[in-house]
Amino acid sequence: MQNLKPNAQRAKKAIFLIWIALVINLISLGYNFLQHDFLQLAESGSLIAMEKVRRSLSTQQDIFLISIAILIITAIAFIQWFRRAYYNLHQKLDYLSYPESWAAWTWFVPIIQLFHPCWIMVELYRKTKTLLSKHTSEEYRFSLSTGIVGVWWALWVIVNISGNIIFFLYSQAKNIEEYSSAIVFSIVPGIISIPLALLTIKIIKDYSKVEPTLLELND
Image (cartoon, rainbow, N blue to C red; front, side, top):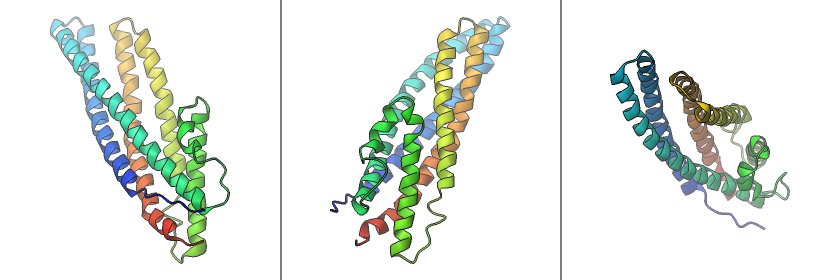
C-alpha cells in the first residue's frame, strides 16, 4: 500500500518563499503609507505632492506586479507541500475524508476554497497526531494544535475577502479622496498578512517536525 514520498524539501522551499513574500508585503505597506501622506497633501493643492504621488504610484505598481508573481509562486509551493503531506497520510491510513487531489484543487474553486482547505489541514493534524500517539510514546498535543489552524484560516479568509473589496475600491476610485480611502483600506489586509505569513511558517514547521516520524512508522 505505502508509496511514501519525501516532503522536507518542499517544506523548506515553501517557508523560504513565504519569507520573501512577507518582505515584499512590508515594502508595499511602506509605500501605501507614503502614498496616503502624499495624497493628503495633494488634496490641499500641493503640486509637489502630486508629482510625488505619480512617482510613488509608478513604484507601487512595480511592487504590486512583483508581489503578485511572488504570491503565485509561493502559493504553488505551499500547495505542493500540503498535497504531499496529505498524500503521505493517505498511504498510512485506509480512509481519509477527501481524496488526495483535493488538497490541491480545493484552493481554486469558489466558495469551496473558503472551507475545504481548512478542513483538510485540520484532518491532517488530527489524524497524524492520533496515528503518532498510537505508535510512539512522544507527546504531539502541542506541536500539532488545531487551534492554531483555526486562527490561521480566519486570517486567510479575512485577507482574501479584503483583497476583493480593495480591488473594487481601486477600480471605482475617481478622485483623490476615493483613492486615498482605497489605500487606507488596503493597509488593513497588508498588516493582517504579517501574522498570517508567520502562522503559515509555523504550521509548516510544526508538521515537518513530526512528519519524518510518521513516515518511519510501520503498519
